Structure formats: structure tokens, C-alpha cells
Amino acid sequence: MNRKRTSFITGLAFAASAVTVTLTASPASASNLANTLVNANSGKCLEVENSSTSNGARVQQWDCNGQPSSKWKVIWAGGGGFNLVNIHSGKCLEIENSSTSNGARAQQWDCNGQPGAKWTEGDGGNGHHVFKNKSGKLLEIENTSHDNGARAQQWSDNGQPAARWDHYGPNA
Image (tube, rainbow, N blue to C red; front, top):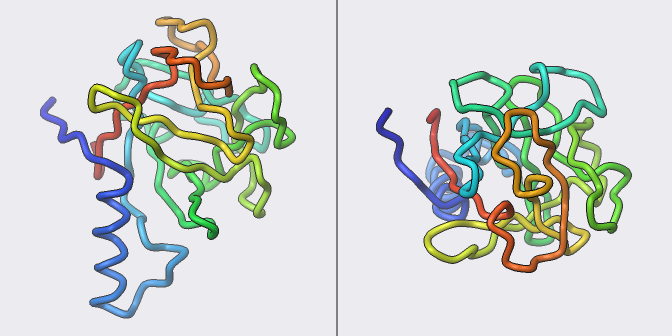
């Protein structure tokens, strides 16, 4: 599969210019293209367990096979941040209970402005990206695992490879 790696920032800049030109899209729908997040350490996709559409469903890594639950879109959340919304469920990637603790699990929940669902993107080095939660912690895969089903969580940035991501889109 030939995938083109892109930056969220590049995609958002393009989407914002499209909004300016067409004047038909609202800022909340500025980037409705599906994107895939691939963990740079494991090579696996970030997805919602069992393609669930329920609040509280666990977010984990799994082999990249095009499943709809591994597709995410970026929606501006204001204040310089964005939400990552699962294409299949329409729910936000968030940190459970907007926790600020290391090891707090990533899950999906209705997008209602909760701080735990607000993210920013940063440079992860070597062409990779990091996703920082409002808590100040990074999205990573537990125990630097390479296994299908390893859960996503947040952790302080200590250079861990499991917190580095590649972004492919649209519709990768």
C-alpha cells in the first residue's frame, strides 16, 4: 500500500484555506477527511476496540487493515487545540475522566468540550509526531508494546518510542 505521510498541521492549514475559499464549511467541520494514526514504534494503527460505538470504549493499537474504527478526523476545539473524532463512532478520543495521571487510559466519549479530549500536535523527532493532551501528557501505547490490543494511554514525555506517531491521510 502506498501511503503518503502528512502532518496534521499541514492538513489543517489546507482545510482552513478550503473553508476560506468556499465559505460553505464551518470551522467545526474544517477537516472531515479520514486520517490514520500509526504508532512509530509498533507500526500498528490507533483504533477503537471491536469497532465499538459506546462511550468508554477502549482505544488501542491493531494491525492496519483499513477498518473504519482506525480512521480519525481533526476538529478544531478552540484555544489552539483540536479533537480527534473517530469516523466510525463519531466520538472523541479522550483520556478517561480528564485525568492528569501517567497511565490514564485513552477511550472514546461523546465530544462535549471535556478537557481530556483536547489535543495538540508536536514534533516527535525523526519525522514523527507527538500528540499532547490538555493534561500535558503524551498519547502512547502501554509498555511500548508491539501486540494487537495493547491499550493507548497517556504518559509524561520521556522520549519513549511508543509516544511517536505517523499520520497518514486522507483516507489512508
